[in-house]
Amino acid sequence: MVALRSCCKQFKALCDEYGYIRHINLSMNADYMNLLFLRNSGRHNLKGLRYLSVSGFNSPAHWIPFPWPMHTIFTNCRMGASLISPPLSPTTELRVIDFGRGILRMDWSKVPKLRYLELQVYDADISGLVSCQGLEHLQLYFKTGKKELPTWVADLPNLVTIQTNLVPEGKMHFQSKKLRICLVPKKRRIKIRGIAWRLPDPCTCGIEHCVAPYKNSPYEHFTAESKIVPWRHLMCEGYTLNC
Image (cartoon, rainbow, N blue to C red):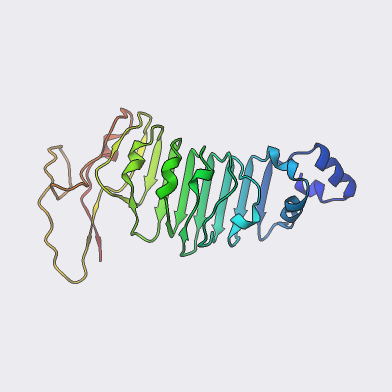
């Protein structure tokens, strides 16, 4: 549709009057100049947009002046350090793979219908993500290693899968009865910088095969209302060392 619209004036007029764009793929190897046409004309063509994939751009949000579609993917992009605040969007799936070393900041209230979120970034501010109560699938992988998983994640009513490398702030009791996959580290971080730290006593949760070597700690095994999540996904795991 985008290529057809760029052929000539007649096709452009026909597409502007009768056509709707369903998919847009933008990358440095593609003819992304078509986006400049969409910024200034034929904006009604985007009412039917369902899928947007952006790859290899710096601060790509500035190139998208229209509401993000249902499926929005940013791959190998540097999202920038400024706050990303798109127009109120019907986005249900958002994936961001950012190889920069900045902190991803976004106004999560602009995507209230979000159900699937994947973030593979250096760091991100997810404090406002609590407004997306419809989240079903959550994948959070941060390279910085300093962020903790907030406990409100366990209160998401429709959570089905959660996969992350973030250590929780405390013990988690997942409220969703739909939970099927819970790949969350339950290890307490112990920093060792040439000093012998005294490790706490073994866990006293009383569950057979529990391997956590600490007690009176908020990082005990998880619990869940769901009856279908594997029990091994909720068990204690012990320590991880940050040297």
